Image: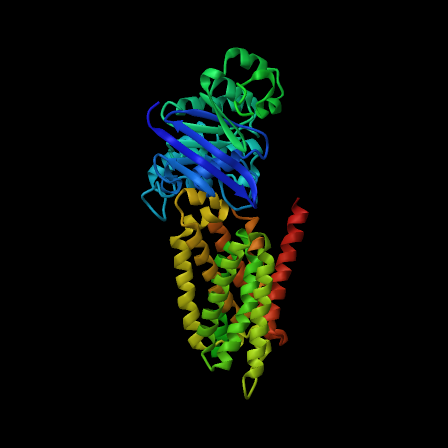
Length: 253
Length: 267
């Protein structure tokens, strides 16, 4: 735990006068592996987009690597939640993953051999290399999700955000992904929005519950006893953060 | 058909058709994938205000309409940005405003009234050589700009948020695209008229999209289809003595339905 990677101070965000996030304070240190959980509409995706600099908060400050988010966006990788947009777009898997090399690449109009190699490496890692020339619309949901994970990884980020990355991936694919994330986590900071208890149990180091307000829980709070109970719980209940003592009750609730 | 080319107006018509097809293929592709068809229609009709200004003040038609259309297009882009959920309404207002302005200014223009129909439905057979030069230069400019910014345009068109994260200047690029659409629309008006512009801008890319694996290929195939439609339409209109603009569009529409039935039978 060294330098803070994400520092959020007294952040407020509202959309069309509906408050989405209130009074958020959050500090994330290097090589953290954070799970963001909470009910639908609780503001998880909004929080991630604010840290990425895609949304501007009305009040408060956000600093990533000590700078405003838009100054360091090249250091951040992002797997969006929605993977079913623009499905009829004439674009191949390789084209999409190459988008992750924009600005990293020294060449502007043509792809360098470094780019080609990086794209091949990451597609092979995700078992998607054989699909490189497929149109994105020809793939299944799980395969599309891997393409977007590949696009985020090929940017070689220092800070990686995944917004519900396993919603369309089967169980085997999920554990493979988590193993890969564990490996990446030795060097980079990872933030995952997820309802997935498997991830929260055995991989992440801390949990942030987001429901307008944000509550941060250190890894130490997630004991084995809690997990045992958690496995028998419907995920939604855990995501609401209250019953079954999965996590310590928030002090001001 | 070859003996037709000895007439200068026919040569000009063929060159204009080819130049416009190239531009329509490339820009039309970006219009379709970015869902800017309605905005393009707005620009095409608002352009009529520019035509009115040109005649009322006795200014040269093409440069005046180009400038007016770009300004109208930027206004639309800015207004739609600020009220995204009602962007179609805002475009509709400017669409009508431009046309009304054009009609009134032409009413107020003393003396001989120009042939409205030629602007509404195009006049490829009367494109002067001077316009051909200007169209070729602008067309080359558009093609070079798209080639230089191809990767950024692709990223923005496919996933704006991710493009933004990768440092693509999305807003500047969007305005550049809108500006290029305005230029293309004004040039296409020469060939098929402002009412039919949308058909030439959208039908070839619509057909091409399903058969291409990349945006690049879609641009090339659209340009080729557009060329085929334009030249075939021109030829048929000459043989049967019909309006060239409307004939070109009907050929394109025939292509559209042929492809639809073809892909229906296939699956």
